[in-house]
Length: 85
Image (cartoon, rainbow, N blue to C red; front, top):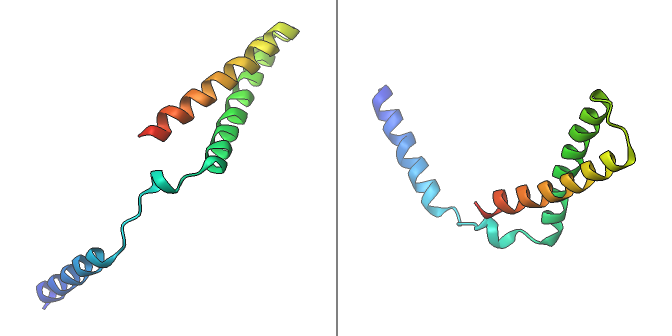
């Protein structure tokens, strides 16, 4: 009895998957979503670099500018690379 219900469940599952419309997420992603992803990654990287600046006692103005620029470049690169996959 268990094998029969398992077989029926598998057939139902395959039939359900064959009728589900396919969705291409790369086509549906727009500029707003790209901006939100980039902003999230930027804030995350900025938080890490700010913490490291404070812990390593590098709090000069040039160190903060370097951290900001590095966070911008890395966030755009990370979103571009992960968004392409």
